[in-house]
Amino acid sequence: MPNEQGNDGAGLASSFTKLGLIDEYRIFVRPVVLGGGTPFFPVLDERIELERVETRTFGSRVVYLRYSRRR
Image (cartoon, rainbow, N blue to C red; front, side, top):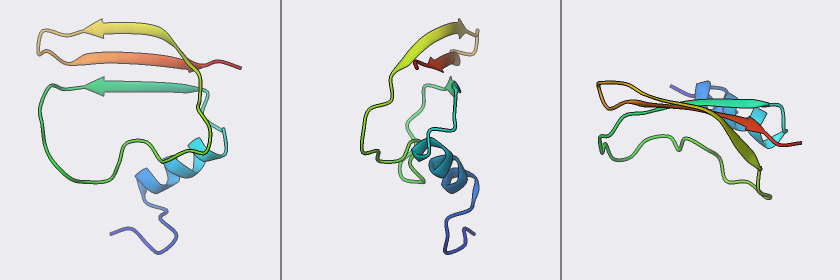
């Protein structure tokens, strides 16, 4: 259960994103619809420009995406 400061995994990652401390995003997308939960990305005050560096599609229909932050 997350604590009041939101220092669970998603809360910590959200804080790092807002502070501009993440240089690369590696995302695995699985084609299913689930419903609620903790948002993957936080609401930001300004846009973060990303450049796709790598894409892989696996036989299981999972897609791996790697993005690098444009500076």
